[in-house]
Amino acid sequence: MTEKTLFEPYALGHLTLANRIVMAPLTRNRAGKGFVPSEFAPEYYGQRASAGLLISEAPPISQQGQGYQDTPGIYSPAQIDGWRAVTDAVHAKGGRIFAQLWHVGRISHVDLQPDGDAPVAPSALRAESKTFVNNSFVDVSEPRALELEELPGIINDFRQAAANAIAAGFDGVEIHGANGYLLDQFAKDGANLRDDAYGGSIVNRARLLLEVASAVASEIGPQRTGIRISPVSPANGITSSDPQAQFDYIVDQLSALDLVYLHVVEGATGGPRDVAPFDYAGLRRRFKNTYIANNGYDLALAKQQLAENKADLFAFGRPFIANPDLVERLKTGAPLAELDPNTLYGGGAAGYIDYPTL
Image (tube, one colour):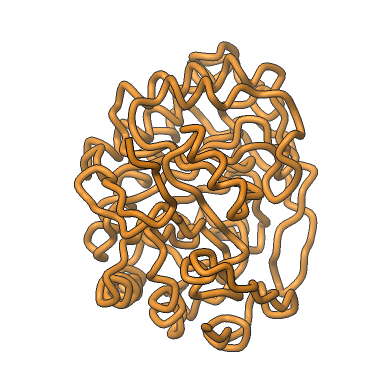
């Protein structure tokens, strides 16, 4: 048997990816008026199209789903047109791109919400977290608990956003079920104190995430539907008393839906991989399709995990910001450039499309 390599083509559902390197979703806060993608976004993504798969910064599925300033949405015709320019740029370079669909739930601020309303959540528990609004990091607002009759509308917003993404030329979508945002809030008992069909048991807390996954897969096809989870990440003040049992159940159900990939943040998002004990190999066994590993990967770790068959694809996040040609640099062992933290969130072309290639 020939040895698998990071730089060989890979069949993801109906797509052929050029390599096993994935550009992880990266929020950059550069949307224009009406939350349309930045005029520089087509060039930004096109510069990085040598990744086997690009996953876009997460567009909120509705204004209610927005948690940070200047994040481009995917719910208006102008936004769809803006994303079409992005997908055209990526496809012109031979790349593949999925859109990450986002509802932040309680990780928001009244200044971002329609009519200055409270953000929504499974339960009225304010997160110990901050958001980026009015050009600064501030505490998130106190949320209100969603009413049972509101949940079908949120499921439909995800479904419609998926249809919009396909209309915008994306090759598929990734449902954002990670990092302490809405679907993760429902799944984890540290944020979900409900006593109805969406709270209490493992099955009930998983219900909204699975109903969203089913609705999206029914709308655009499971071969164009991936999902991201972060079983033990404490991102955005989220906690879970028994993540192994919760996510074993969730992943069994996701596999039954035949979703094209499972994107797993291993450990604490952007932090230690060993923040809490968890059997990721168990998730890998439970999920029959592609497993994307994420968090703290460098070339050596990705090679090792691939050789041990612990994942199929490997997501790199921040290294892609300052290294648009990251795949080539990894392939040749070239040094990686460092990003400028001052231009990470917000702004224009500087620190966005002006990082040089080799």
